[in-house]
Image 1 (cartoon, helix red, strand yellow):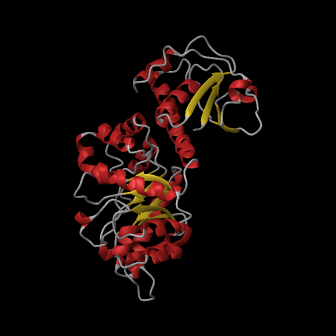
Image 2: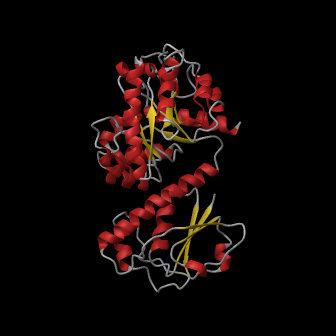
Image 3: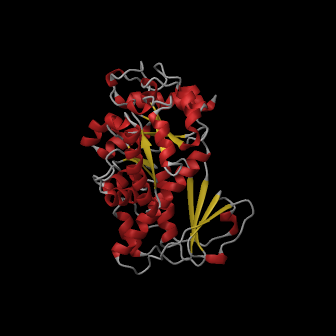
Length: 381
C-alpha cells in the first residue's frame, strides 16, 4: 500500500477533491492524505456541490495545516499551487499538478477542474498499482461482457472490480464517454487503453475527445478486413490509414495501436508475416496489441513472433482454448492449449496484458476471474 499526500494552499478545494477521488479510485489499495500550507476554515461550497454530483460528500471535511510529520508518512507528495512552502523530505517523490484554484469559480469551471483531477488521479493510482505488480499490468476487454454491459454498465464494472482487476479496455469508446468515466471512477477502475475504429472515414476528433474524457492513453484500431492483408499494397494502405490517425492522436497527447486477428499473420512472398510488414511501415510510434490467440490460430509460434516484433508490442490480448476459429470453444486463460507463461516471458516490453473472450459458453465473470487468478499466480512464481 502506498500513501499519497495532496497539498494546496488552503486544503479547501484541489487537494480535498484529489484525496477523495484518489480514495475512490484506489478502493482501499492505497491511502490518501491532504493538507494546506495556509488552511481555510471549511471546504469551498462550490467544491462540495460538484463532488456531491459524484456521490462524494466533502461538507464535513476540515482543512488542516501541512506539517512535516504528515509529509513523512507519504510515498508521493502531489503539490498544487503551494510553491516553495511545501517542506522537502529527502527520499519522497514529488509531483506538481498545474491546476486552477476552484474558489469562487462558476460550477462548470469547477466541474472541469474536478474532471481533470479525476483523470490525473486515475493515472496515479494505476501507476502505484503497477509498481506493486510483477510482470505487465492486467486488464480485461469489455467486449467479453458486452451483453451484461448493455443492461447494467455500473453493475458490470463492479463485478469485474470484485475479481481484483483495476483496469478495463472499452470497445465502444465514443458511445457515452461521460457515463463510462463516471462508472469507472465509481468502481475504482481505469481504462489505459480502448478499442475504436481509426480507419479512413472515422470521426477521429470524436474518438480522441472521448479518449481524453475517459482517461484513455492508447487508442487501438481493432479490425481491418482480411482482403486488406493479402497483398503488400493492401498492407501499405492500412499502414497509411493508421499513420494518419497517429498524427491526429499525437496532437491530443495520445498514441494509437493496432490489434490483429489471424489473417494479419499470413505469410508474404519474402516469408515474413503481413503484420511484420505493417509494423515496419508504421514505425515505432504505432504500438502493437498482439492478440496471442489469433496469432496462434494464424499458425504462428507466438513467443517466436514476439521476439521478431520486439518492443513495438506493448500490449497483449490473452485468450485460451483449443486454438481454432470457433470462438465458442474459448476457455479461461490457463485452461487451454496456449503457452501463456512462455508468451509472457517472451514479452518483457509489454505494459498491459488484457484478458478477453470473443465468446464463452460459461459464466463470463467466473471465466475472467479464473484467468486473472492464473496470470497473477504466474507473476508470483
